[in-house]
Length: 377
Image (cartoon, rainbow, N blue to C red; front, side):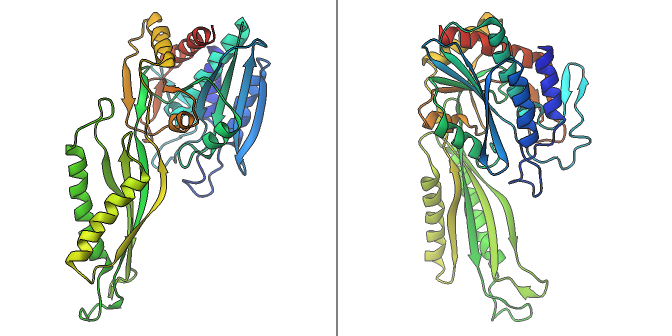
């Protein structure tokens, strides 16, 4: 546990902001090297390979040499940005909490994976193998997880995103949509010659707001609640004294199992169609930019039950739950790997004061090791 906590502090001290989110950010390379060194200390076979140029995945393999199942433990190395934070890469411990960017999301989860496999390596496996993967780019497009499932297979997986030591068997998906509203440029003093694209987008925003309210009023998923939609960014216009010819809006639609990006796109296209039918001069379009599926596994399946039993044997409540955020579990599940989410406790995800409770990192690692022993038995 001491070595695991030292790894966690080392990882938090490394700037691994995702460069797809913040221009010029360094990405995961230094953090990947740190994890790889720690895995090699326990004589694991370690593979470091780029999921994208300069964006490495680290995979460590503990193999018993005997036939048996493979359990994958997976976390991501990248973080979001640090705007508004004081000393985000100076890990600070206070009252049993470790503060710093990525402490909870999710370098503590990565450290717990490494701690679990190092413990198993010290004991020795009798059958099967454990694979630890620290992947790139989860905070944007998950190119790391996509590369992982192309090259590796497993009979079960645990993604160690923060769950407060609950066992998550479901999470929401998302679809990112880009809308364009079109007007006509003209001098601000000549309204008969211009059409205001920003006001056109305002009409669209009103319809989207009503649709979000409708989504929230629909029957809900027992673990995930309702779907939702919100406006993310907007820009348009150029000068005070000019009618704007164009306005762009980015929208995020959070989806439930059974919903996808095509459905989200169709929903918005229908709304635009109604606005267009009421005003022949109305001009706008929408396109799907990125989607990631929601995820759900039957809580009665083998892996969730093994993990719940291992956690409760350690005195944890380990309640079955769902997560509002998206995780790489969906990509692993789509690749045919039964996956659950189980990780440490803390607060401040993507916020200016992020922390993890260190005792929960210990519990996470010990529970993962116990799960692996049972799953491989």
